[in-house]
Image (cartoon, rainbow, N blue to C red; front, side):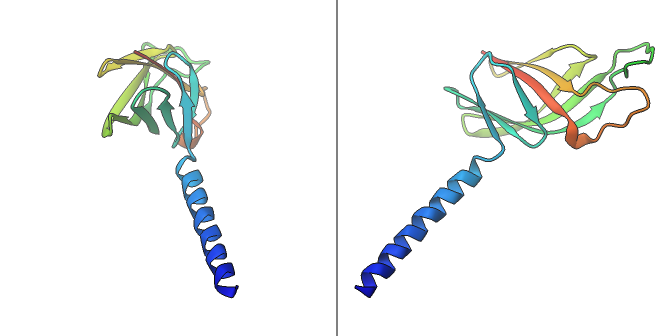
Length: 139
């Protein structure tokens, strides 16, 4: 009887471990459909339903957009470092936002329509971890 109890406890712990590992591997993922606008914080990954496509928002590598309350000659741009995984192959991809508009980037038959929030304000420093990518993937 004691052996049966030990085997049952062992099986239960194994199943719980598999459940926890599976749950942890899905943290940081946002699932969405094509043509659906999503908000993706730094460090999170978009997984596109029904496509073998994932895009991780790694960081904003530069943000020279003209701050509100300031007159600029150039609207500026924000560059976002991402990692695109398509059909199991990962590659770096920089998405660029021009000024404050949704800026499309075309790559491998997909259009990534992207903007970045928050928009810079005069006299305020943005924490790089606070950026959110507003993203729509179109095929």
